[in-house]
Length: 282
Image (cartoon, rainbow, N blue to C red; front, side, top):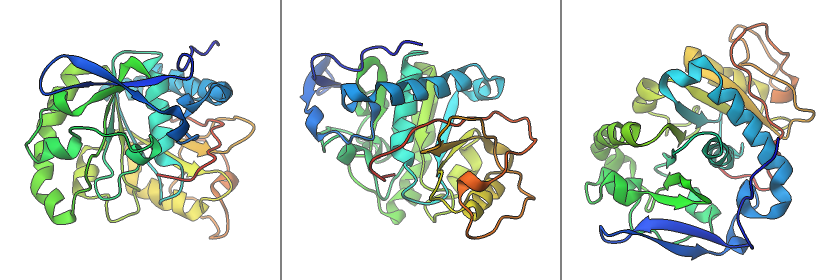
């Protein structure tokens, strides 16, 4: 498998709509991009290829193709969730087009800081507040087929409860515009995973750290997600071997890590990638 050039001559550009006019490109300094994102430098080709293999598994799987939505979550913070979700969106954009990445970490957004805090006119929070349209809130990144809708300003819990119903209109628009949508969701065991996610997150990819995430947390996350859990990605796993969601009835010791969960017999989609993250965010 060959991996397309991530960016040319060390240059990276964002494309965005300015005041309702045509899209314009603005430069993004690659030195400020978090190295956990595979497009950050030319030394990431091996990791980029591992995400493309993961994208192939998802694109070729009938269950994922029912909705073409990938809700990415983790048991808790510090599992590399945001970088994994974005890298997967990039990989999908080399397989299908167009792709939309949506940041749903409403209270503690990470993506803009990972990109070096570029200025954006509108974000998904602007859409929820009713001051921008879906088209105005997205920008292209890395290639013309990967669009991003990031958080511009964090939302308070009281604001989210008031504005979240507006997200359904955004989602209806996005479904018509994009082949696949990747959602960067809050951790499933956190208070930020609210009733909206329980209702709408129908196809979930769970991210855990191979040698760090407690296995009991992976099991608790699996129980909460139930049949919505379609696959698991272990960050830092080597060698690359398939892993399906852990069986919910299996007892695990509190000291075990995700890497120590025995492979179950369940025939669900298995997704595991060698995606060691040098920076723990998301």
